Image (tube, rainbow, N blue to C red):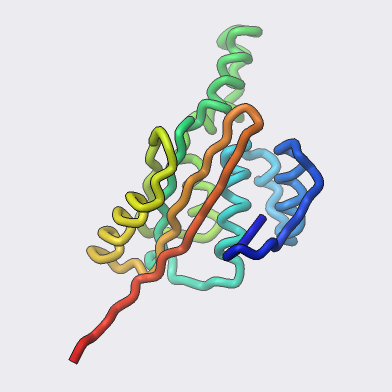
Length: 174
């Protein structure tokens, strides 16, 4: 895990599950709900924790805009595998609840009490510039002082989270 080019957490784990647990424990957090989340939510949740650690904003002054390419396909495939193997009655609500990519936003918003803009885009590839443009428009129109933008992708054990915090800067010329 890096912040502004500096390593803030290192792990020898290469598999996602043990890595993300170590990264979470390193934060010193104790939210038992974390262990029930799907992998996409865990990835976004931990990335947001590292980014927002030691920040304090009013809930309506902060927003979050994320994107990825595979939506919630990793969890969708697990959900479908259960249904295919055991039938509809075996479908687990605990898995089904995570079959939308915006659930990761919900988990982050709940944790940090974010009540500003929250949007999740599904795109073919990461495009930080367009996310930043969108965030700047939202920030200019509203009361947001800061907005998290980022790429949160997870599929078949491959993962990447890259979050950035934008601040609303006002300039007065005389």
